[in-house]
Every structure is written in structure tokens, then in C-alpha cells.
Image (cartoon, rainbow, N blue to C red; front, side, top):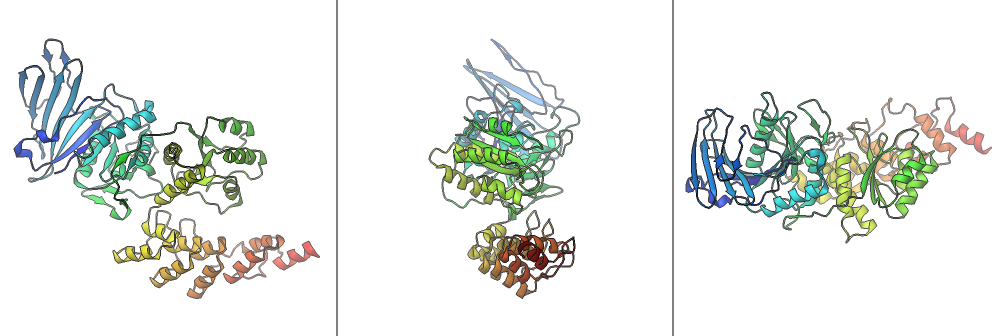
Length: 550
């Protein structure tokens, strides 16, 4: 039996819910889904007025039968039969006292022998998504926890403005989740003639009702995204959301295709719980040319406890602005946690460049390819953990950054876990499969300097010629991070630089020579670079050394 729940971002606090056990014997084998609503999105509208009488009005044109039974409470039941290829059964139970409960039970036909039955719960008063706060996230999370054992899935109907923030927050608050929680909404209200709400709602219901995807997800425009990887990219299109650094978990086309390789699987036997403690003393600070130290200082003052710093490119900031770096360094020393995220829609934060390394040295945690929404939500979640020290909180942030890496093989290669790689291979996975940035496990292992992991991957057929999104090969990664033994192994296997890759290497060699960086020169020599290559001004490395020291 399938059971589930839904909650949108325009939300009603409800008083109680109907028990799923109230199903008739005829429906005993159909699946149940529960919806905790924060936005009312029915295809029909009705008005309830109650004093001593009960008045109902319907704006739809379907044939319907009403039975009204009055006792101490008013119960109103009616059936609604569509002439389409599927059948909807609609039952309303309304209990009146000083307060009332508004609950809808619907039946959605899938085939002759299976249906998804779901319950609709509506919050009162409704909340606009622009008004969402951490308290509202906690309320939705607690409602899911309250009914977790009664239903097999949950769909949350939410306004689009802050849907990505709510999805990210719930993904961290819902610990040890084993059932699907899917947020969806619409750009155009469902009661309009031309809208995207119907498809989004049906798609979310069908996926939550048929597949066990134990994640907080966001479904929009025929795609299911991981909740903490998505961001809103368009205010005027039905294709309003995107997951820049991770492919969708599912695509709803003629058939619903699930990308099971990227679906997160819990690795614990702990019971599901919702952690509702969120620290509100966090913020987003976006760098821009000419930003003053006074502005940064003011933003970093108490009670601020955590900052997501949106930097240029792959995590860079001006390294010639000692005043800015000093303000950042001073803040991190007094315990403020800062996460480095890129301003770019796609890509990742690295410390390959000197400007990026300067921020790392100042105490920033690299956010890798997290979205600002995910980084802010995670920061709020971690800072609320009073049982953790500042160092432990930073490690927790780094842990979630790593778990967001899309490919399991890449994650295993990062920590040098050969046993995990072997298990992945035995399950039929290709260890040369690239992630969303086209980085293979060999790229990752070469970056980290895991020699034995590199040996294992090469033995499994990993190619040394694979290039990632930036055109880098595993050999280039090993040279950049100065892993001498990995460079030697890759060269022995046949890795080499192409003519295009060696363009400009003379300037790099001259720079190393000017700094007397013998280790850097040796790495390039082992990688196959000619130490007599001239720079852009015609100088060779040896000539640079002679001019500087003779």
C-alpha cells in the first residue's frame, strides 16, 4: 500500500487529518499518499459558509452527487467522476466547532489494478512563499515527521519564489529520510485556462506514488531535481528551475525515466527525524569590484555567525586587497564561519589560483559546487548544532559539500576508497563515467594524489586522455597539485601534454625559475615539459635565473 503527503508554500495550519485507515474495504489494496498543503490548488473552487446552515457552491461542470448528513458535526461527501482515461474520487470531510478541519481524499488511477490515493491537508492562513521563514520550514518538517509512518510519500505545493530555499532547508532538516518528499508549484495558477500547475502536480504525485526516492526533491517542467542542487533561473518561463551542476534525478517524458545512479541512498539504520533548530544569524555577501572594507566589516559584525561569500569565477577574490582579506581573517578567527561559493551559475570553487588560495588561507570553507541556497541552508543548520565546536562545524560543512558530489565513484576516488570503487564496479558501474563537470574518478584521484587508487583505476581501463569541462587531463591535475609519484605513473602509462597544452608553458617555467621553485620545475620536467622552452618574451628559465642571481 502506498501512502504519502503534500505541503505547498502558501500554507494552512491544520488541526487534524483523516486517518488512512478509514478507507473502505474496496480500496484496501490501493496506495495512499498524503499531502500537507500550503497552497490551495484544486481544479475546482468551492465556498463554505457556516452559521446554522451549510452552503456549497461549485464552479466545475462535472456530474456530481451530494449527500449531506447532519449530526453534531457536518459531513459532506460527494463523488466526482471524470470522463477522461483516469478516475478521480473526491471525498470532503468537514468537522465544525469553533475551528474546522479541511481535508480532501482523492483517488488517481494509474492502471486497472493500481491507484494512488492521497490526502490533502491545507494550512490556514495561506502563506505567500515570499513570507517563508525558518519557522515555516520547521512546521512543514514537523508535519512530515508526525505522519511519516502513515504514508509512503509527501508532495509539498509551494510558491516558486523561495521554493529552492525550502527544498534545500528540508533536505538538511529531514535526517535519515527513507521516503520521497517532493516540492512543486506553478508559474501560472492552476485555475487559469493555460497553466503549468496541472502537469507539475500530476508529475510530482506520480513519481512520489510509484518510486522510492529517499530524498527531498523539486519537480518542475517534467524534471525531478535534487532539492539542495536546484535554483530558480527564470521568472517568466515554465522552465523556471535548473540544477546547474547535477543532472536531473528523473525526466518525465513518454515514460518516467529515473537516473538511479545519482539517487542518494541512506547508509544508516537510524530512524527518521526532523531537526527543526535553524540559526537565523546567517547571510549572503556578494563581492563586487570596489567593495569597501567598511562594508565588509559592517556585514561581519555580531550577531552574524555565518556568511556565504559569493566570489568571482572559481572562488576568487582580489588578493591585492589586504584590507578585505584582513577583515575576513579577523572574522574567522573570532569564530565566524564563512563558506566560499561562486557567483557563476555553473562550476565549482577551487584553490588552484592564488586569489582563491588567499581566501582558503584566511579561513574560508570551500563550498565546492553548492548553490548559494544550499550553502545558506546548510550553514543555518550546522550553526544551530550547539553540540559541535567551530572546527567540527566546519568539518560538517565540508562533509555535506562532499556528499553533494554527483558521482559515487568520484566520491570514493576522492578519499582513496578502493574497496568502495570495487563494489561500485561489481554492481556494473563504469569507473570511467564522468560527473557533471566531465571529471572522471581518475581526475579526482590524480588531484588528491592517491597513488594506489590511480593504479587501480588504470588497471580497470580508465583513460589518461579524458578531459573535463575545463580541458584538463588527469596529468594536468597531478602537475597542478604537485603529486610527483602520480605524474610518474601517468607518464609511464602513456599520458602526455598535447601541443596546445604546452602553449604558454614557457611563461610558467620562467615564473617558477624566478621564484627558485625547484619542486615545480621538477614536476613539469617529469610531466614531459622542455625546460628550454621560451616564455612570451623569448627568455628561457635558465636565463631568468642568471639575470636574477648573477
